[in-house]
Figure 1 (spheres, rainbow, N blue to C red):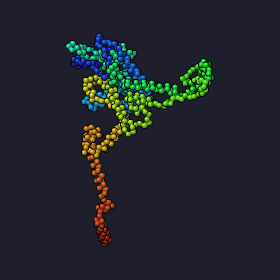
Figure 2: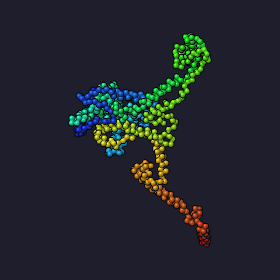
Figure 3: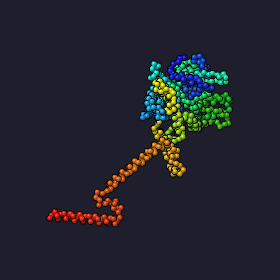
Figure 4: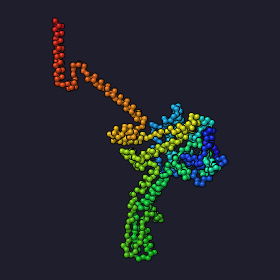
Length: 550
């Protein structure tokens, strides 16, 4: 056994604080560990239940399950919804808006996060990485650094087969002499790696915990201390479905063809002679010529007996004589209700809606007009799986920033609660879902709108029907006020322009619309004034003409 890798040690003050902690139960973590008693330099233990071997067998079983079409289709649906490989958006991005970090630190964290994604080649291999984690139920990466210059951070991330590595815990237990109670101080964790995959003997390479990035599924069998995968509960339904399908195939092969029953009249012959006579009739009438497709020959194959042979039965004198009847084949060969039942059961065990297993030509969300409850549950399951998978990025960015001296591990853990990861969503599916949700909210709003101001307040409707937050209400309110001001300005300008267009060049000229608005008396007055104005103009022109001629 060798000790290699690196470990970011605690300060002396933290070590003294942890040494003073007293607990009566061991530390429980999300992933199970094989506990060994501290003794000597490393400590040893005897694995009577072969837990490590069983866990490796589970991983192998999960990988065999995805070779079946039903499991493979379910895993494809889950991974495709979890990791969206879109040309216009990256599969995942870090969100630092809610954190209290400075703008400079946020910029550096985003750059280092992009560096982690580059080392994983997540843009191209994100689908394979998530599928590997989902199928195996765990994911291991070795963190490789330059020991000569650790300030450069993580250099490489190398995948480790989960069947070759196991998390171990060296637990030091001491007993309080006054009370006799067992106390469990802080334990020391490490990883045991065996290139051959045989972890039951506790022989292998001892690795520091900071050298390994371990992402468990979160499903734990506390009885056997094993980390389970998401496919574990589908093992039994899948086996039942396979056995039932095999039984259906055997039944149809044996019952599908029709067979004949020959009743041979043997008269008063003795038993021996009757049996010989029956055999002679069988050989005489039975045709066993078969066609060899490989050679193209027809040969006699009387030596072989098949399960589809006809029946030959003797009949004594006094009966109906020799008779040939037909035994019908199976009558319920088209019934598949039992197979369909176990298919639906398998879909439920795989956390995939049953509707997705059915062949559909058109893409819709549940029904054509509503979102099914199964789709909503499935989307919530995808979000939980994403959050569990994002633990990998937390571990990697924490170690990467600590090595480069950008942030300490304590500072990162303090800001970790306000840091989230945004996975890309399917644009088409998201648009359809949001459209259906908004349509339902507007329909409900139309029914409640007459009751607003009487039984419901406007603020209550915005919060409970439209699901608006306080920030949304404030922003939308300001936008509505700005749009009202803009509308008033737009309404004022066209009216002023219209009035300018309607003003005539000659004040004495009246438009048709003005004439329609005037009364008969006003119209007659205007006409008389117009004639008077015209006569004055004519007299002025005549006088001017006489003066010029004189």
